[in-house]
Amino acid sequence: MGGGFSLGRIAGVEIRLNWSLLVIFWLIVLSLAMVVFPQSVASQPAWLDWLLALIATVLFYASLLAHELAHAIVARGKGVAVEGITLWLFGGVAQLHGEVATPGDEVRITGIGPVVTVVLAVAFGAIAFGLGSLGAGEALVLVPVWLALMNVLLGVFNLVPALPLDGGRLLHAFLWKRSGDRARATATAARTGRVFGIILIAFGVLEFFIYAALGGLWFVFLGWFIVAASHAEETQTQLGTALIGVRVRDVMSPDPVIAPNWITVDAFLHDYVLTHRVSCFPVHDLDGRLTGTVSLRRLGLVPRAERGTVRVKDIATPLDRVPRTAPDELILELLPRMQQSDNGRALVYDEGRLVGIVSPSDITRAMTLAGLSDQPRAA
Figure (cartoon, one colour):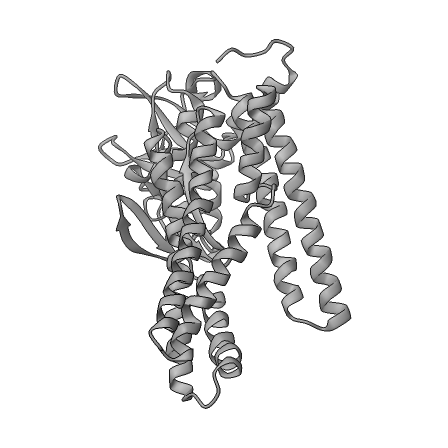
């Protein structure tokens, strides 16, 4: 869900719009302005249909934002870090970092979203009733009616017990509370998510080929997203379980090779890459100061014809964009920072001196060793 732009902050939470939102936003406006409103309200100017469609769509996404913002605010109150909220093709996502402490906290963080959706549905229904009682035009009443209906439909759909939907998270909290095994609860909830996603995909394929309905493609894409997201959540939980108690010093590659940043890419490939079996190098300037890192991926982006003129410092990731850690930090605390960095690496300092580097391959190796170990690791 990368890309897009920031709208600012609400209650301290950054709100972002992904570019994919423009696709569904335009489709909703189009369907309302050219189908729903013209069929429901006769003899209405086309410009009014488009205006009401635009207003209804903006309020619809405001409803989604309110739902996700409720999740984020409660999560932050429970000590879970909130990176922000992104509105995108499939609605909204509150990006939380860190684990929920108890099943009860998960119920509170998850449950507040559907509560807000129900409140919005009731509020829009009351507005529609009030406007109708005051003799407002049919078109004006139709906007809150449509918004109330959409919030009801989204609320019901979101309560399906399948990850990553809210219903799936509530199921996870219930299974976690009953068994005391968080990983097993996640696996079960994720399995229901994959089954539900596959059902949506099958339904969408049948609808598309039997009825030639383009709406079937939407179910296919939505089902695919649910399958992928449920698998990602299960993998993330397995990752966290395997790395409980593991510290940076346990997985880092010590004494990294530090290379000069003023030489050309061609010279760097010949003198360093071909002679050292590592995929990322810290680099320093003429004064010996670290200036950043350069990875094989960044080196590979330089066209072959330009490798003799482009210098390493021109393509290196600046030091202020490389996560910094200490040997005693827990890997689970470092991971979110690594995931947000340009090349997924972190530099390890001990008393101001560079002593190691942590890469994704180091994390993978630690997980593999944890799986091979017969001894359970204590938190």
